[in-house]
Amino acid sequence: GKEESVATFKGNEFFCYDLSMTPIQSSTDEITLSFRTLQRNGLMLHTGKSADYVNLSLKSGAVWLVINLGSGAFEALVEPVNGKFNDNAWHDVKVTRNLRQHSGIGHAMVNKLHYMVTISVDGILTTTGYTQEDYTMLGSDDFFYIGGSPNTADLPGSPVSNNFMGCLKDVVYKNNDFKLELSRLAIERDPKISLHGDLVFRCEDVAALDPVTFETPESYIALPRWDTKKTSSISFDFRTTEPSGLLLFSHGKPQGNKEQRHGRELKTDYFAMELLDGYLYLLMDMGSGSIKLKASNKKVNDGDWCHVDFQREGRKGSISVNSRTMPFNSNEGSEILDLDSDMYLGGLPESRQDLILPPEVWTALLNYGYVGCVRDLFIDGKSRDVRRLAEIQSALGVSSFCTRELQKRCSSTPCGNGGLCKEGWNRYICDCTGTGYLGSNCEIEAAVLSYDGSMYLKIIMPSTMHTEAEDLALRFMSQRAYGLLVATTSKESADTLRLELDGGRVKLTVNLDCIRIDCNLSKGPETLYAGQKLNDNEWHSVKVVRRGKNLQLSVDNITTE
Image (cartoon, rainbow, N blue to C red; front, side, top):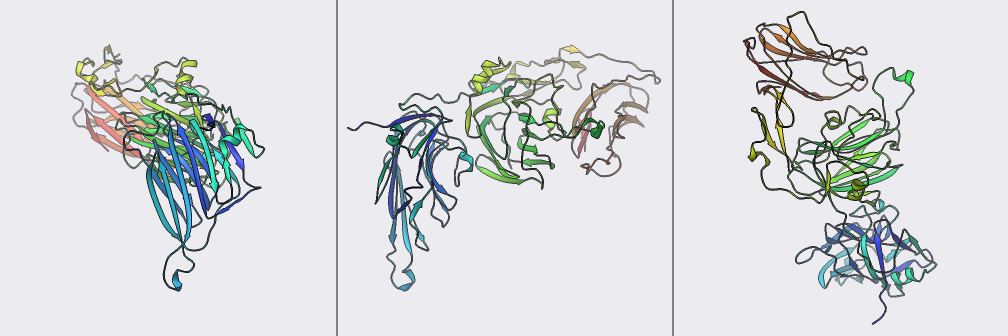
């Protein structure tokens, strides 16, 4: 048999053939190649521009063919009879395209052409035919991309945003006029071929990107600064049963000088993805106002892998969650997302003095780190080995592999002193509110302070806080029907949150000073009452939860909104 032409791609490699000297004009053609990989997603071959292209990719372990001949795109999907194609075995793909005169009768059909496409993987055949209104040759006059491209997310019709990882062999294109043995031409360094990345012309095992587990809310991995410029893409899979947590966060340099800011919140560009109450949110600001997009219409903390794909070009872009895509547009203004800090995956470092946390990113300010698994992280089409990064950084609480333990952690009743136990991702969470105890197992007795009506305790925050989301919990015991429990004050604004006893009830007043440009809450203070006859010299638990415009006040687990 003839010599095989093989190359190994590791996520940053590709080669391309320049078609400008030999544009394709043909009525019949055929593409053949073989692939071997462990990776679920990746671009194998692409040629053509916006209205006329062929794209062959692996998506979620199945082979996708997307073709456009100028009259709209169509997709063919080939799935294996059992298992997936990313099983590290060789698979053979063949795509044929034929343009035929339609066998219609009468004048009406004279110009119509019938267009047939067949794709087979390992002999499993899928055939699609459709009618073309006007005569179009199968044309292409730019490049053949093999194994990837400079910006895969930007390719027309591409179902994936990352390059291929694995081996490709014997990639051949042929039509009525000529035959291009693209893999062989790459090995021979043909002048029309350009090689990119660290291509090896033999088949080496390319490890699947191992998943990592963030075991605690404090665990995180720091990724290098994301140089996003005008276009960018990020894709990854995550898996958890916990409702809330910060998945990704990075911010830019503060805007304006110190005098202009006079203590108001520092404005920066930022990018974040967070889980909140089971839904995925995209948050970003390119300098012309923040975008907050609820990217999933159903909860994604069901313990199954969830695939996220973010793509942006200038002010426009999209985020897709499990292949359901939502577009977004940011306001007139900057088209550049300027990020300056590390990009944090899974949470934030404990020392945050240098971080500027935008009030819109609620999980960051509430200290909700992500607990669960992440795999297949690609940034701008390039793979990031998060397991390796975790090793290099000796990241605490980050382990390789992803297993979901089936045993219920709460069955061993780990929470003491009447604390409520909740199941997390391979962990239990003790809710100690209302117990008089603190600590991860409600085992530390909480300090009790006594006041005689003329005393107060003042706590000075290390820096001015600007938040849109807060959790506040306390317990009290009193015989008096009136008295201030907690109040916040600020030198810089009239914003205040007050909690007091008022006629034996708990009264919550939130007054946001709406002089701020982006403050669109109802004018004047918001007030909620809860409980009654609470001045009975018994302990009572109070909890305040604010999420933007939504306020909740609970007393002894009875909630008013």
